[in-house]
Amino acid sequence: MTAIRQRWLILLEAGATALIVAVVWLYTNVANGIVVVPARRILGAFREEWLFQHFVTDLLPSLERLAAGFALATLLGVGVGLLLGSFDTLYLIWQPVVNFLRSIPVVSLLPLALVVLGTDNTMKITVIAYATCWPILLNTTDGVRQLDPTLDMTARVYRITGVRRLVRVVLPAVSPRIFAGMRATLSYALLLLVVSEMIGSTSGVGFRILTSEQTYNIANMWAGILLLGIIGNVVNVLFVFAERRALRWYLRPGLSEVTV
Amino acid sequence: MVVQEHGSATSTPGQTDDPAAHTDKLRPADRRRARPTARLRARPVVLGSLGVVLTIGIWEFVSRFVPVPGDSVPPTFDVAREFWHQLQLSTFWQAVWLTLQGWGIGLLITIVIAVPFGLLVGASRVIWRALRPTVEFLRSVPGVAFIPVAILLFGQETQSTVFLVVFGAFWPLALQAMYGVREIDDVARQTARVLRLTLWQRIRHLIVPSMLPFVATGVRIASAIALIAAITCGLVLGNPGLGRSIAFAEAGAQINQMYALIITSGVLGILMNVGLTYLERKAIFWVPQGRHQITESHK
Image 1: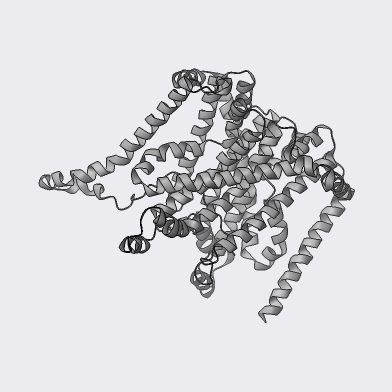
Image 2: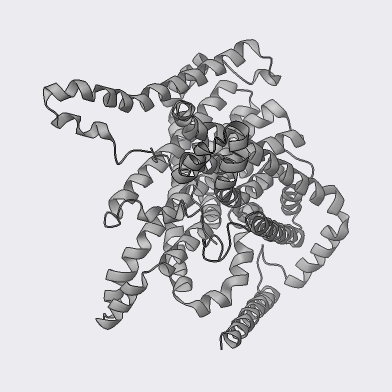
């Protein structure tokens, strides 16, 4: 019964998506405008541009910046978050500053980053890391502060302290929240990647999209946007996969419903 | 899939069960004993101010003694003076106004489109399944990727800012609205059925009250992204507004001015967050404290 229903729903998903794609395909074929290009030409441009002419020169640098920035943000967010979460005084001291810094719309810091760091990779990675670290930092801090009292007391009774407590008790307990913060912030990483490549760059997907538009190569522009969608999706899927593996103990059925 | 909120500016722990809140009712004899709690209450303020002072001190130290490329860390006093100077310029207020305009119009349009969309998609499992792959794909395209499209369609006009704000803010809000509909209490739903509420009554008494908390949180998330989109438009497209002013200050090596404008954008961000949090509290007074935060700390 449910199996049949499942199959029917999957069929519905595939059918409806095919229909949407077909409608877009036909629409782009008949419509005229500055920005509408036949879908066939976009796919053609995609094959030419990204398979594999600009793959090494533009796609790989972008992915590298994304990965480096995100990794740095995780380290920073978890590290500082653990510190602020563990010491109440530190938390109270830095809370207003943290709140102000994370309220600055990150893109307005880009010109400053240009002045300080120039236009090279370091700038982009730093900017991505900065923008991305806040949700991770805040989630980690809150997680440590709201540590399950039973867990905390059990650790105390067993005299688990210091580094051992941090690694064996605190980190596992807050890891679901760390992952939640990382997932929430993935889209910010991608956003900052694109903007930083549009502002100060001579390579990257964002750079290609903008130059394609400036040379009125509209099909190439859409191909780049399509590529960004693909990157976003692949990164998301990879992340969910990693999260499922890392939090397997936590995601056991009945324990919670982190993912649907 | 759960939307995680980026923390909230007002989540001061211990806010609800603050022992010092009762000091006024105490008899004089007890008040002495209550003093430590009063001190406890002042602690966040004192320590928080200490943090601010420390930050300014570190900044001043860096600007004086640490060599940074391009003299990019000016003394705090210079920035403060420049900030004060900016406050008296009409160009400054115009830039702020234009940024706020793009943000506000964009956010309004987003609310008008995204909430009904979320309602529709969230209410029907069939529609959700039919649209899921498309939605999942589209929402992972960053809104700023459409900057070139905005340039082609509208040029350097307010419309292109609005267009990009909508593209950036749509999905976060639509998804929150969708979860809101899904979270309608089963018992409440069945009660409505038993009472044979009409469609209008169901919307009024069942759907809106349970959706609104999620929508309110969604608007707050969308607002932050909308501000980013509005400023990006100034930076990349050269649309008049704060973003462009910051880019100009950078290009003209007006470091103090750049800092003043960046701080302004931060102040705007805080004001929006605080304002929307306040509205959220007012608008969803019927939700027991903490319940609407389900999305924030869903683990």
